[in-house]
Image 1 (cartoon, rainbow, N blue to C red):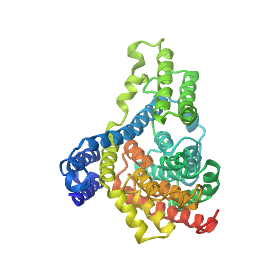
Image 2: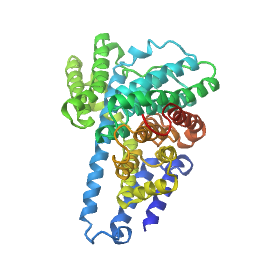
Image 3: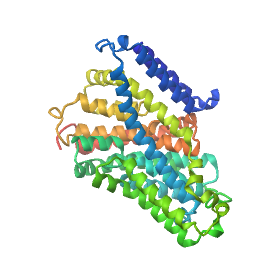
Image 4: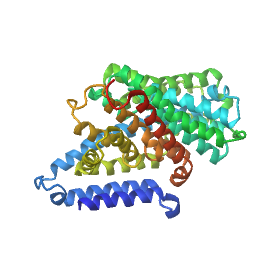
Length: 437
């Protein structure tokens, strides 16, 4: 049954990858897979976990623990998507799009990618991807070009998040756990992370010629453009972006999870927009209100995220990931091979439990604070997820918002992402070698 759990996960993963050929929504496959794997674990726990007693209460508590962590991500995702959509319906993104005048693909790629790289370090890769996907919908009409730019946003967001203590959830884990310190992780990883972005960007620059076609009608304020003043548009944009930027500040001051910070920002923005539209009648306000914006949130993508993370949590609870980490240690030995493989695996299995398993396997007596093992782990786990569209939170968000196809991403973006991934590791090795600081 232990092996059957892994088989079910692989089959569920294939169903997600083949969403369009089999005509089954990826969210349905994900939540079904998660439920089946946990069902197997609960019913056959004596076989899967022979050392455990017959009581399944501890497994239920484990599920609740994982669900609490997953819920933090989901509520943050819902809150951030709502803020971005609210800015969108008020035409707030015109503040940026009106200033991006170039339509040349190569120039626009560099502007979007560099902006994403540094923005993800200040916010995080998930929030940044949500914002940039909203911007791309305003700048690009053609679906193929839009997806290519979104693929580059995923790579840039993951690369930008890897070198910042608050940019990626795995780097946050290592930072909070004491394995790395803020200034050191920035100094050691900013250049390798930049290479992770620049190599795919150069690839895309040479393969993408011509100009982008802007959308004919920019969906900004749902038909209310004439009733929204410039001050109101700028106010919503400023408060919306400010609430996103405030999340890491809120977390550092209150020590509360990021979803509480996004709730604070969304609540403030909700109150301001309600008061702002008092002058409009109920019929005129229409889709300007948060209650209407919430109906535009892509809930299937949220459920997909829930399903895949619940499934991975079951594998972690049953010991599959710990077994995998132990096999890597005994088979590979070299820290570059171990972390490089963890990075590739993080494109298939969520990087959070993989990093958690590594943190548990390797004590700080073996690898002390700011050892290159931890820095390399942050780089590989943070950027390896770019290899597949569902390999990172940024990819899942972009997939949901822009309906990116799994197989399309595999064909078009995996090779440039792999080029950047290997280039980043090579840069790290050239800079810091195999030991010391």
